[in-house]
Image (cartoon, rainbow over the protein chains, first blue to last red):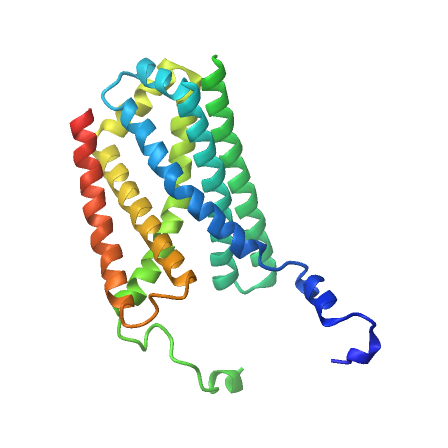
Length: 130
Length: 128
C-alpha cells in the first residue's frame, strides 16, 4: 500500500470502511434482532396460547387486541430482518457464481419484504377492524 | 482444469468424523432455514385471520389436525433449538465457552431444546 499517496490518516481510512462500503452493521443487526427475538418469541407464544381452544372468531378477537397485535407486529419485523440477514450469509457462503448469487440475494430481500409486509398488513387489519 | 483438481485441498466435511459441536452448528443453520420457510405459514395464518372468520376457520382446522400439529411441533423445536443456539453465540461473543466446555454447551442446546419443546406442548394442552 502506498500510504504516501494520500493525506488520509489510518483512522480516516478505517472509517471509510474500504471497498466493501460497509463494516460491522451486519453482525450488529444480527445480534440486536437475535436479542429482541428472545422476548418477542415468548410474547408471540403467549398470544398463540391465548388462541388455543377458541373458535375462529374468538381467536381473531385475541389477535386484534392492541397489545397482542403490537407483540405480533414486533415479532414479525424483528424476525424478518433477522432471517433476511441470516439467509444472506448462507447464500454468500454456498453460492459462488456471481450471477446466481446476485439473483439469490435479490430474491431473499424481496421474499423477506413480501412476508414482512403481508404479516404487518394482516396484523394492522385485524387490529383496526375489517 | 486438471491442474486445479490436483491441487492439495484442505480437509472438508467428508473427512471429519462428526462431532456434537459440529452437528449442533449445522443444525443451527438448518433450523434457521426451516424457520425462514415457515414464515410463509405464519403469513398465511395471519392473512387468513385478517380476512375473516370464514377464511380463518379452515386454516385453524388444518393447524389443529394431526398433520398440522406435527408441523407445529417441528416448528416449535426448530425455534427453540435456534434460540438456544443463539444464546450459545451470545456466550461465545463474551469470549467464554470456547474451551472444552463447548462440548456440554452443545449437548445442553440439544437436550434443552427437546425438554423445552415438550414443556411448551404440555403447557399448550394444559391451557387449552
